[in-house]
Image (cartoon, rainbow, N blue to C red; front, side):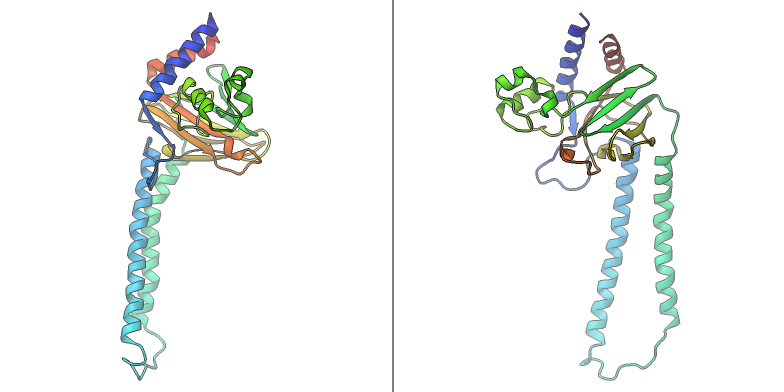
Length: 284
């Protein structure tokens, strides 16, 4: 009976995920960051835009000065060059100018960095372990754990799948059907995992990240977080997702032959859905 409950819940959550936003897959013609789903990501995006404006102004200023020098002080326009070697006001300006720019950038970037590294009291604690080439998750306060394999790698292809035409790491019609059966869209190959990290919306999640073999990196761009998992060490990251939906990330540290087949899937759900998921996991 427990298996039936778990299977029914998996199908329910998969169907709900398809109806919700799916963030993190490639979009034709798109540029820029993925939509921000956390305050941390929003601050990173704003900081990037601010720095882009600053460096654009600097580039235009330097190009303008170069153009003035080329046109005003070439040998034809200025056949008799000046003989002085110093200009104190100019030297003061080009010294103080960069200092002021760095102070402005630091005044906004350092608080954002400190916020990422100052860990609040978690509502949900998750331990993440990188393996070659899948992720293991443990909710220590809830007593549950599971492995998350990419849908379509060899570990997720059963004898029934092979009979239906599914081949590991090969995107064909049978693999697309397998993705749909797992609750994903047909174009989410290499992104979807057989088990997803499930967290409640609007709650603080702290992740303890490590690795079992080589260095991996748990990265979720929409959350504005990325943390290397180093064997024998435990590092941390935190986020508070504000938008219900399914989010895709990837291992972002070259970790071996199948590094490209180590995706991350996080489902942000309501409190009620999270409680139901926890109960089903514990029952299973």
